Image (tube, rainbow, N blue to C red):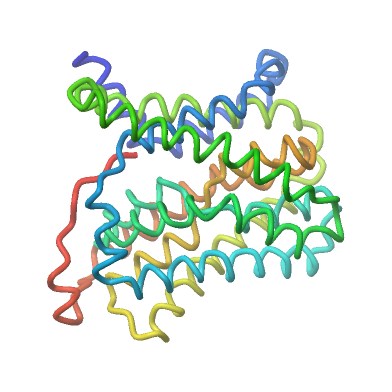
Length: 324
């Protein structure tokens, strides 16, 4: 068990490295990974089940005690990222499937890795966790609705089918994880240390499946879509931060909102794109899985060296331990 815990720690700490290495290997030698495509939905369900195991009642306390920053962050998540994706797709004149995939990336909720980045950036971790949880629970409604409004011109959107997909791969595993934690708390507590290993293994398998299946397309248009993903992430971080600032949030809240808005649940993006738009549409989310875990640590490292306290509310925030 000790060995597994050590491996799990390394897996979580160097997550971006594993994603990049896996992407390169799957691109250079795609054949061994081509059979993994059918397991994407199951693997994402495993990741979300792990999220359910780690959620606590205290994670939702801030929603009731200080709902304004949560509301600001979640609204920014579902307004800024879809609209920025739409504009970038238009300006870069992306092919239909890639454009729909980029908009889909913008319409999915925040990713769990953002909580770790906020912790490293000395931001408001409880706010980040609450935003991730709320945006994830809203995803069955918000993601299909936003896609129907913004991506319909490129690809047909079956909002009902997408709603059912999100419920199956997100809500059901999270609820199952919460139930297992309630009835078997001791066993769950003992297993938490190896969850990062399971999550990282599932995500890099998803990445390998999509990259191997789209190696030729990546070679032809990889630079263009990678530019789009970088711009999307950069504007999300920037606009998320200044939204918090304009609405009177303290520095620790601004950092949490910025990172939460800028980092998406790329695994969900891959699963939904593959199921509803086609494998090519999953490419933006695959590239985002790598890039978000490069830009996030860079920004977190920069902020970690700068004081975050600029108000009494900020001073009251204490960092808490989080796990990927």
